[in-house]
Amino acid sequence: MNVSIFGLGYVGCVGAACAARLGHHVIGNDISENKVRLISEGKPTIIEKEIDELMREGHEKGLIEATTDSRYAVLHSDLSFIVVGTPSTKEGHLNLTYVHNVAREIGEALRDKDTFHAVAIRSTVLPGTNREVGRIIAEASGKTVGRDFAVVSNPEFLREGTAVQDYLHPPLTLIGTDSEQAEAMFREFYKDIPGEFISTDIDVAEIMKYVNNTYHALKIVFGNEIGNICKALDIDSHKVMEIFCKDTQLNISPYYFKPGFAYGGSCLPKDSKALRTLAHDCYIDAPVIQAIDQSNQIQKKNALEIIESKGCSRIGILGLAFKAGTDDLRCSPIVDVAEELLGKGYDLKIYDRNVHISQLTGTNADFITAKLPHLHEIITDDLDAVAGASDVLVIANREKEFEELPEKYPHKVIIDLVRQYASLDYEGHYEGISWKNINQNPAQETEISMDRRRTDF
Image 1 (cartoon, rainbow, N blue to C red):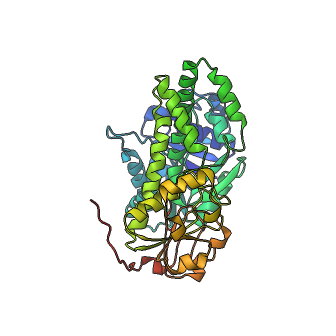
Image 2: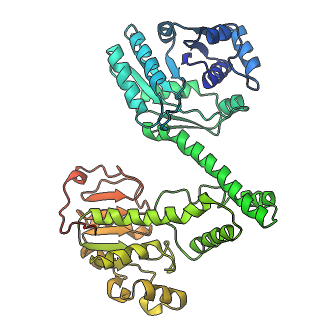
Image 3: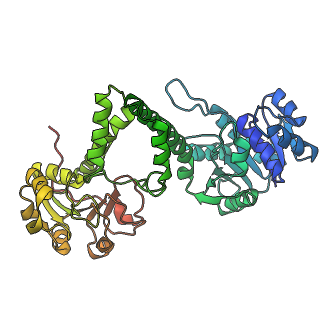
């Protein structure tokens, strides 16, 4: 394929060399005449392992050229990569001036092009940038996005020092697009790259780099805080974390990474509190570990605010145990929400087929006595009784029996804390605690009939 790369800095230089290695013809573009000269001579603009050889190889095969003429680059390519810098402002926002300037130059060049052109944003940008770049190109070119050209989000995940290998052997290749034609072009471009090719929503692709890097930063800080605690106790922190990383079923795995409701149960609250106390007793400042419980409390507050925002007094909670398939009520986060709702005078009903009041003993009984002493009056194992008597249904445990709720009880308000549904065409109102836009039915936009207003004191 013929591709143009706008920006010959770190990512652009690696991209040019690696694209040539894949057999594509590359036109590099930059406002810096020195960078253009280096690329034109088959030399990289950066210091990076393996880059010299790849650049020289591409140049000798006639697969790499460079120019300061953006119009030439666009007219002689089918696919353009935007890889210019996005520096942070002093307030922490991104400066997108370079991205917008390149988009305008590409748009002006497209005025004289009759064939479809794909533009990939490779620079690290926030959600919404793709849409703005599309608007700028359309305005400058007089052409229509989606028909004459497409803007694709194609974030890079390169590490300095291993960037060439990261490009040629990634765990996955990600694009965000709503254009089938553009997707086909990118599948062709990356066809010789191993790893899964993922085409997803544009805004999902736009946010992934920030999610990845923030998690990487979190891992480093978490490891350091554990290390500081271990050092104070004369424990070998590297042995601790080496064993920690051997657990690929829970610790290093997709488990626990699904957005949803707060955690609860007998172990997580107790043990994380114990570690926080241990750090405090050792005079170790561990702000990330200290903030875990605070963040968990915020998620409970979020659930309560969503429920109250519906303005309905009759609330049905579906699932009281801390997770599905158990009757354990200890530190169940939904119990805290139920306690708040009762205290505010809501008409509350609870369904949980695993929790039998007559069989509550030991810790469960003590916990409920302290939290919900009148639980026997509001809980039942009759799902239809709770659903029928409630205007708002709060799904707190993911259960197969809840799958038919939208069909059996249309026009209810459903608040989903556990992602019970992947997508919906539901006549009532639906809201997820950490996601939205999965209910495509127009009835979602109708006004909810409220019988109470939230009052803050």
